[in-house]
Image 1 (cartoon, one colour):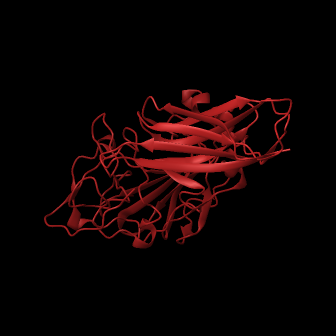
Image 2 (image 1 turned 120 degrees about the vertical axis):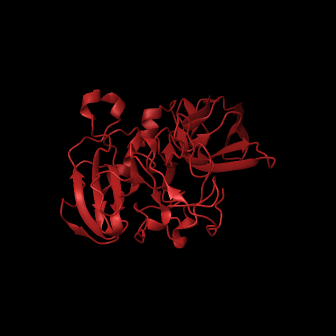
Length: 352
């Protein structure tokens, strides 16, 4: 986890349109008008109840690269994806706010919250953003908020919004496989008639002196940069279940029990992960109320994956489980050029 301090520019830099925007020429950085002051577009606590799942793709070809030269993106991805834990949190309502003052230039609010892979392709054709809001700010800057919850959009075309105004709720509409906010920043040069602008990564801004680091003038204010620190891996959710947990059920939030029956036939410890890598060593451990170890299972991740769910469990050892508090521990060990790093998380369940 890291971010580099801003550095001064030593020569002219250019902002280039990503290749999929088909914009024909670069814009010289010194000719770009200042970006508006921005706040976080989602009301949540990063690392606690929301996480960044994907960043802007900086590669022009079929390969992918985020602003740190890492792989937390996918081909031609134009924004920053703020993921929430599950559908239960989505239904409770996670607020989306305007990052700066602006005018609403487009909205959509009628699409279902559903995994797009369950829909015919024509249902989302030219509607990949799902329910969303597009805001125009001063100096040619545009922000876009996608995958909002059906019937949650609070604004209409032509409305004036102030920084921090609620514009909708996080949802699962459009081309989305999980509930999240896709937040996108664009720049349209003064006098241009183009509708879509240059994609700008808010972690970079319009220029930087070296690749693989935060920009000289990122669009996020300094007060937010600590919260937005790049995280190489997250154990973002874990818990216990009496039956083998299904990925769809975990995404729905169906295994968040605080108590289970002592007559449960099995006991599973499950975890959900962002950005696991091939070779990561993963250990699941369950301890009984008397602190004895009931399960200690280690495996090795077989491939890089942006999102992964895994579990381990055991059968009821006797007629009933002992009543009391059981503890679950997940430990992931990743080797790197500095020797390695250990990621840990733990949870409890009461059996009675």
